[in-house]
Length: 322
Ligand code: AMP
Ligand code: MG
Image (cartoon, rainbow, N blue to C red; front, top):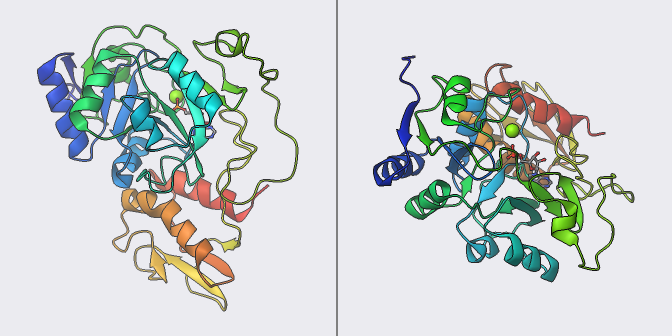
């Protein structure tokens, strides 16, 4: 790949127009935010979201944060209780991510939430990201714009070095002000510390103590994100409620077979054997299988290469839940 890939364009109207065109075409663009540079794609387009994973080389699917222009847009995607509304009013736009119940009609790709029934959402306080949200007209999923396993980028040059040859465009608007990822809050708990402290968020609010201890109580129901307490410690990744058999080359009695490539099933992740398409379809296919009449689920073999590694990671967790 040429050394000019990705292109780095200074923030401005022309750069934002170009970035919006990439987003509308289903691609990813690296954008500055007030926290770190994010790798943004259309959160309503499952293939575009799969492209984020492909570019980062992430070996597993973690739910991504969705960025929206304002509270009204957030309320069309997530369900706000009074406490969440209060936090949003006080700290948005800003480096606060709220984990909230996902609206069923939100139109967000299941790959964004990794199949969970909650969504992490925020309103960024950065002119470039806000300009892109306005120009693209869609919510943007955006994890940090670095290859998996590297540190988060706070300058366009960090992004270009980490994702060289993997993304088309970086918008450069200098160093990011905060330099660390957003604070993530669910209810009155801080799931990930960040630029806003517990004291900033909950001071004088009369809420219970903010902890990072795992929640206790009954095992969460399938598909629920109860018990998700801290990034990297997702206690309950989405898993179907039925038995799941991997590397299935044919359907056995009572099974719903999810095919791939030459193995046609009741459903398929990708008839053409395209791994990006398979990633984009994964959670929808699992939900369909779970909702269907068959007692068990089988999934065809998925090549352990590229984004197939993340697909297999997720399938193994679903087949062998803790
Ligand atoms: P990043 O987008 O890379 O900054 O990371 C997003 C973080 O938000 C991940 O570490 C997730 O664990 C967390 N997160 C996203 N969605 C949820 C959710 N529905 N419930 C709990 N945590 C979430
Ligand atoms: Mg990251």
